[in-house]
Amino acid sequence: MFDLPGVYGTLANLAVIVLGFGAIIFIHELGHFLAAKWAGIRVLAFSIGMGPVAASYRKGMGFRRGSTEPEYLRMGEAERAEAGVSPTEYRLSTLPLGGYVKMLGQEDANPGAVSDAPDSYQNCPVWKRMVVISAGVVMNLVTAAGLFIIVFMVGLK
Image 1 (tube, rainbow, N blue to C red):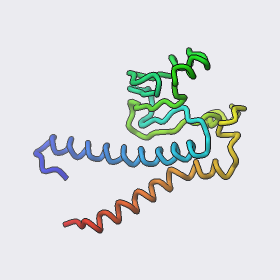
Image 2: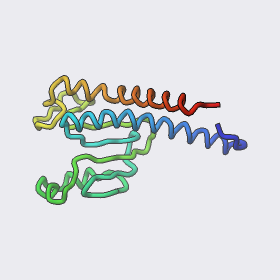
Image 3: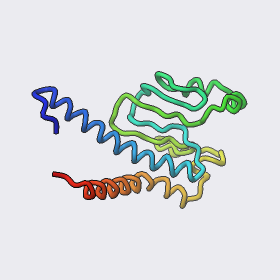
């Protein structure tokens, strides 16, 4: 893609690939996130990347290096409400090989773990859970269709 000589061209092309995959992952996970919010499910984390958290943001707590979760868990329910702290942590993790949306009551690693909270994934009607699960793929399809239309309207050499 780039006409840079040697290793610089390779690094530039690699950067474009990583950013492209990151955009696809972001759009996919955004679909799950928006659908979960629409369904009334409490979202605990929205992460781009896997592994240890490099940086995070939580409304009411601001930006942090690492995760805000330990500090959030130390706060009491009343203290969180008074400070206007959101239950959702937005994360940028160290391994840019995926992403995830962590919802209350959805424990893929431990299906036996349940939550009785009214805004948990398990207490949501099945049809809403189906919407949440399929929203990532639907968002990818909508994005692809939109980009297809734009490319053909603008045109390429």
